[in-house]
Image (cartoon, rainbow, N blue to C red; front, side, top):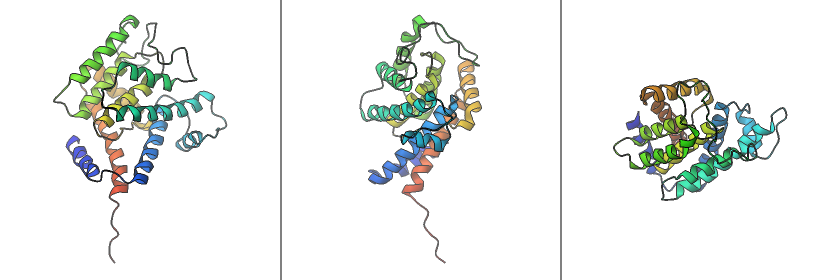
Length: 248
């Protein structure tokens, strides 16, 4: 799968620089899908169409203010992430806190951008996050590990990075969304389109994370991340290499 992804990525790269309007269309399409699915995994009940309407500035009846804010905040976090991708420097601890601050903006300002200050458990998970006094050290070790890794395929490496971040669970709330933003920031820095884990894959996603955390086997989570990249690549190629009409 990873070899096929790299072959398809090379096809996209052969079209760079992408046509301006094509690039904007792809960016908007993927940002909407990403926002809808990442929030949906965490329990947000906005549909894809409702998410689109909220991002256009329209209030949807019967939905909570939190659900509206989660959509808007995630859109803004993607915009901030795109700025990080354009920078040549590796992602930092400050960048992670800033992403989280955007995710929880207007929802929980006391905790936005701050590591949890009480010990917590991850609901339904088989592992326990580190003591709150050691969260900062754990994140610093994670980034040091990530920046020093060589020899792994980027998707395999980033799937492990995502799992290790989720296992640390550094914040009271918003860890999943922030973790997927971090994952895609690293993918995009490596030249890949974002991996969008779909709402309907939620159980497989949680199972894959739990397996990786408890056994060190990252195959399942790497496969899910890779499949998400494959879908994004397919969206690119659909516009860049549309099928030619057959002659009668």
